[in-house]
Image (cartoon, rainbow, N blue to C red; front, side, top):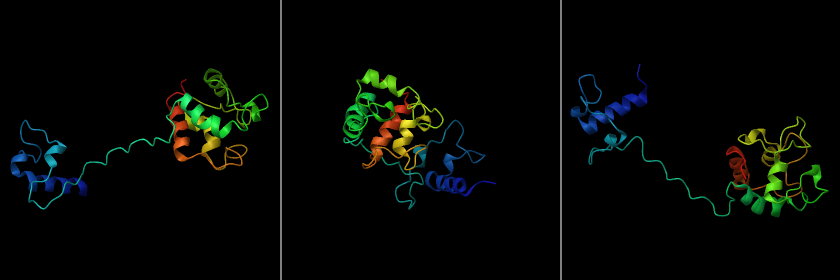
Amino acid sequence: MLGRPYVLALLWTLVTLGPAACGPAGGPAEGRRLYTADLAPNPGSGLSNPDPDPEPEPEPDPACPTPTLSSLRDEVFLPLCSSCHSGTLAPEGLALDLAPTELLARLGQPAHGSPSGMPLIAGGRRGGSFLYLKVFLETPLAGVQMPKDAPALSDCQVEALGAWIDAGALP
């Protein structure tokens, strides 16, 4: 049995393109393929296209960091995290004010506060990255959401971190 959307699309095709669009079995005429462009309504038919063009992708927010380590370091870690996570006395030994090369090496290590020894950053897997879960979850696996005693990171800041991790957490 054919689903309702298929039947409606077939009827719409027959009405707008006429019988010439269909071959003997009700499909495209011999040697002709039916493309979505063929489904554009005929002027004056009173029918609208059942699959309108999707909305264009929105432009990236210039206030959001790009998903790179240097951008995240400069626009998220240093201004929002390094007031606590800096120097040798940083909580859990996680200094986020390091130079990019040192920071990447530190982020690849296991998280001290993780109950399962989860790495701070698991390249390619934001859901397996302790640092991501600490800023994404309101109630993380251990401790409190970061930044502590400050507003949560914006959605675009969290998404930039997640996108960087998903892309492999490259330098």
